[in-house]
Each structure stands twice: as C-alpha cells, then as structure tokens.
Amino acid sequence: MQLSLCLAMLGCGRVLTAPLGQQVLTTTGRHAGPHAKDPYSPDYRDPYGRKVDSVGDKLQPLPFRNGDGTSVLGPRNKPRERQNPDVVRPPDTDHGTIPNMRWSFADSHIRIEEGGWTRQTTIRELPTSKELAGVNMRLDEGVIRELHWHVQAEWAYVLEGSVRITALDTEGGSFVDDLKKGDLWYFPPGHPHSLQGLSENGTEFLLIFDDGNFSEDSTFLLTDWLAHVPKAVIAENFGVPPEMLDAIPEKEKYIFQGSVPGSIDEEIPKSEGYRKSKLQFTHKMLDEEPVNASGGRARIVDSTNFPISKTVAAAHLEIEPGALREMHWHPRADEWSFFIRGRARVTIFASEGNARTFDYQAGDVGIVPKNMGHFIENLSDDEPLEVLEIFRADKFEDFSLFQWLGETPRRMVKEHLFAKDKKAGEKFEKAIWNAEKDIIKANRGYDVEEKAEL
Ligand SMILES: *[C@@H]1O[C@H](CO)[C@@H](O)[C@H](O)[C@H]1NC(C)=O
Ligand SMILES: *[C@@H]1O[C@H](CO)[C@@H](O)[C@H](O)[C@H]1NC(C)=O
Ligand SMILES: *[C@@H]1O[C@H](CO)[C@@H](O)[C@H](O)[C@H]1NC(C)=O
Ligand SMILES: *[C@@H]1O[C@H](CO)[C@@H](O)[C@H](O)[C@H]1NC(C)=O
Image (cartoon, rainbow, N blue to C red; front, side):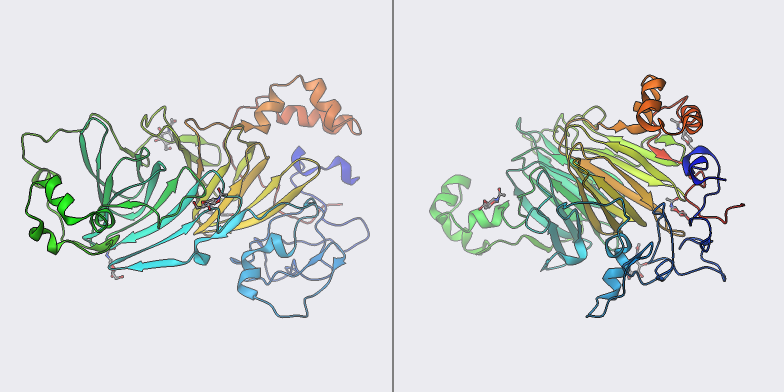
C-alpha cells in the first residue's frame, strides 16, 4: 500500500505515521495509553503534524521533529513551554517570519482599585492588536466604574456575575439595564456611561474598544473633570454656592465601592425631565438561537441583530470534542479572539509561503490579520473550547475554504490539487460534493493516529 493512496482526508480513517520500515507509532498526546510513545522523544515521527495537548496530557514539549532538532540545555520556563506546544515544536508547515499573535491577560499589568481591578491588552502589549483593544475588568458587588466617556466605542461581553449599566444618548434619553453572563452592551463614541457590580460576588467582563491604541487610563471621568474646573464655575453651572463643593473629590475615583442599588424602577429619577432612551444599548447574546454546525454552535452578533453595534461584530463559538473551527478567513477586519475556556491551536497563513502556529488557552488573546487563512482546533480532551471572535466591523463576514472549493468547477479543483493522483482527486470531489459552510466541523477521526494495517 502506498502512502499517497491513503490520504487522511479521503476516508481511509487510518494513516501511516512513519515511512515503511520504520517504527510505526500508535499515539498522539490525546490517546496516550500504556504503550504510548512520548511525542517529544527524538525518534517520534508524525509527518501529518497532529495536535498534542501538552497541558492536558502533562507532557513537556521539546524541539524534536521527525528526526531533526535536539534537547534544551539552557534555562527553561517549563510551564510556558507546556502552554506553547506548537511554538516549542512548530509543525513543519510553519515557515517565515510572522509577528506575534498571542498575548495572555495573565501578562497584563493589573490596576488595583477599591473593590475592583482592570487590565488591558492593547497595541502596547500586543503590537498586532491594531484595530481593537481589550480590557478585562472585575467589580465586586456594589463597586462602581465611575461615570465616564471616551473617544472610542465600547463593546462588552459579561464573563461572570451581573452588572448594571447606565448610559445617555445624544437626544437626552436615559438607558439603564441589568446584564448577566453572556450579555453584551455597546456604547457609541463619546456616550457617557457607568458600570456597577450587582450579584453576590459582583461581576467580571471583557470590554472591547474599536482602536488598538485605546488606553483604559485615558477616559474622561466625572470626578477628574470636576477636580480640574474652578469651583466658582461648577457653582454657576449647577446653581449652588461654591462652599457646597468643598466636599467633592480632589482627584478621580475611577473604580470605587458604592452601595448596592435597588431595582431599576426604584433607581431611575422620577423627575419630569426624565426620558427613556429609544435606543437599545444591550443584547442577550447567549439567549439567542445558535447556528448549529456539525461540530458545535455559533452565535453571531453584529449590527443586523444588534443595530447600535455599528463598529463591532462578534461570534461566540462552542467547539465540540475534537472539532475544528473550519479553515476560513475574514475579508474586511482583523480578528481579535478571546479564549474563555479550553485550549486551542491556530495556524495563521500569511501568503508568500509564510505560516505560523500559536497555542491559546483560557484568558488568552489571539490576533488574525484580515484575509489571513486560519482555523481553530480544539486541543483539549476534557475541557470545552469556548471562544469569542471579535471584529472592528458592522457585519460578521468570513469565507469558508470548504464552501469555496465545493462551489468551484470540480475539474479546476482537481487540477489544482490532485494532478498527481486522479483517484484521490475523485474521492476529494465526493468529500466536497455538498459543501456548505459549516462553521465548526465535527471530528471525523482523521486526526487520530492509529496503527496502519499493512
Ligand atoms: C462568591 O465567592 C465565594 C468565595 O469565593 C464563594 O464561596 C461563593 O460561592 C461565591 N458566590 C457566588 C454566587 O458565586
Ligand atoms: C498611540 O497613542 C499615543 C498617545 O496618544 C501616541 O503617542 C502614539 O503615537 C499612538 N500610537 C499609534 C501606533 O497610533
Ligand atoms: C440547534 O440545536 C438546538 C439543540 O439541539 C435546537 O434546540 C435548535 O432548535 C437548533 N437551532 C436551529 C436553528 O436549528
Ligand atoms: C474539545 O475537545 C475535547 C476532545 O478532544 C472534548 O472532550 C471537549 O469537550 C471539547 N470541547 C467542547 C466545547 O466540546
């Protein structure tokens, strides 16, 4: 049997892992049994570049690849190496120089305040984070992120707990809402707002700003402004005597402990001038009906179903056992991904033969510049993979490689890929016969290394 007749994609289901005559190995990290062989030993062979879950399988990656490479003698940061199996031993399909596309919030400086904290991933932490910046913030129960506004629009996803938001629109309409895990909000540029932790342990959320150069420290704060205006002017503005203003803060509060609020109805001003906003600043993303893919679920939110969100589009993905966020690219916006649960590997194809693979886990941020081909592979055996793909765009858009080839004249596809093997070309044609976009592909077992029956 020839190797070329049994291509992994074509339904053989079993693939050779070593040229004839060499030891045939029977393992991946995922299926390491008692007879398993360490995929980081010098004589391990895997010409297909299968995934290894070094964290889940407690393996220590080493730079040995198909007979090349050697051990590490110098100082090592082993936990970081374990988090980066495809950086320590990149697949041999990686090539060329590609800037860094991974950052972990664990490496972001935390600003600690009364009852809360905040940390950011911007173009300063991750130079490829050009279009969007992210902020991870935590507020305990009753703790307030003070009344403020900023140059950039703000989009947010509630990670845990619940939070009350307030905002004002340009018509003077007021908006107040309570959000739970999986809900979103969006504030257009310059719109004033506040946030407050509500539930027993407050809340934590991810904020996205539509400029990678955003800084969480350069927002316009109520207390900061009033601390920098002569009290006589403030007194005129509000029609109160200046002595009354001796009590106001001398500097910004930013995040501080407030009291636990009552219901929204109890809290909103009962004055004649109070007007409810006609705009909807929030969206219940996880309550939405998902797009069911063969290997998971996707929820897409952009200005078509969340009209105020004109500059941020997103997809929330749940990727099932061994499943793959299919090979695709985004035509108009860079992807800013945030990993909520699980572990994944992503190879980014940058044209001119350049490609690089990165590994991600919960709390990590990934970037994929627009038009660069990529996939997201669920690495873990036991942890679900949940990820947000976020874009500076009014609409979520992607091109599926599978769909593209399926809708292209088959003759052309075969002449591109299978000129050397007509039989394989016919099988491939069957594989793409009914090609529809399938945003997450179910595991069909071709990634599992098995002993070939010779
Ligand atoms: C709040 O945090 C405490 C301490 O970590 C924990 O025991 C409790 O279960 C949490 N409550 C909720 C509602 O998550
Ligand atoms: C980011 O903003 C800072 C401060 O406003 C500015 O000095 C810097 O040039 C900006 N960087 C980029 C890449 O736009
Ligand atoms: C997706 O699957 C869920 C659970 O199986 C089901 O309840 C829902 O109706 C499906 N949605 C669509 C759009 O088919
Ligand atoms: C990720 O894949 C593993 C198996 O490889 C599976 O056990 C886990 O549940 C998957 N994640 C999700 C979200 O299904």
